[in-house]
Length: 291
Ligand code: NDP
Image (cartoon, rainbow, N blue to C red; front, top):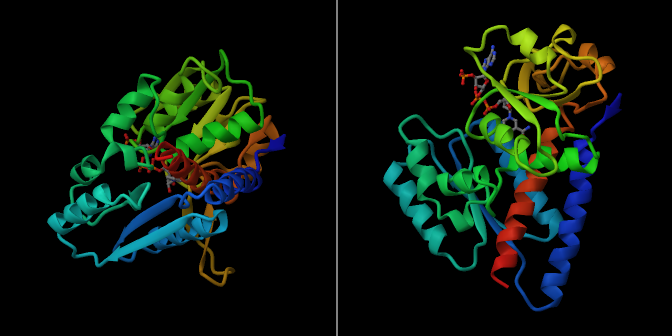
């Protein structure tokens, strides 16, 4: 079993980006600039946003954090998005999800100009990605593909089972794994909460990507011998032995499953850091286009 060390690969990717940023600046250009909109005080969202801002600093990006109270109106949020769309000093921006219930996610996502949609959630970017056209690939699936590439995981002709069909992880992940390129060229099955015979389906996966948000859901009896397992899940589980009162665990029972795998990602330290690095990668792509 080989561990796919997302933390180490994300560090590598960020170093490559930092080198390019330094070159950009020495050629007289301003550094890439990413803005993050954070609404409310969801602790997990705050943690992710802080990590994104910190990663910007570490790579020489400029970053702006726009924080709003949970009661912000949808119209004020849309107006802020319009301003960011027009701001020429900004290469890309994201709106940290989830949003408060009174704000319609779909409307917010569609308001972001596709050329600054570095989260890759806008329907134009999703549509282009599904057609294999140049687009922003959303950060989590993009980071996973990068991780598979850097570990030279064989994907061609393999059966890839994606557990979960959300717009931000499962659905784009499935599209990427069926692309006619590397990593890709898989035969893909997408499973979700209505899937029957889930265990039998998972057992067919040469590559199993779990993104359902259920701690330790995937157990050893659901995994094919020699499979590549990617654990996207980030779940907070109560743990009185930890100072903060909880620990993070994935969707995969790592201890049970890992002995059967050829490759596996840990949680934490797997997909999470790759997601952040890939967001910077997307912002870098946006910044290159203005030069
Ligand atoms: P969602 O809740 O949006 O989607 C979960 C998906 O899992 C749905 O498609 C759902 O099916 C399916 N599902 C739920 N229960 C089951 C079940 N018992 N059997 C089969 N399928 C099931 O979650 P996200 O996609 O946003 O996130 C998934 C996980 O990944 C979470 O733990 C999240 O925290 C984590 N995450 C991690 C990131 C990272 O950077 N590492 C980034 C984003 C997310 P249905 O569609 O039928 O409801």
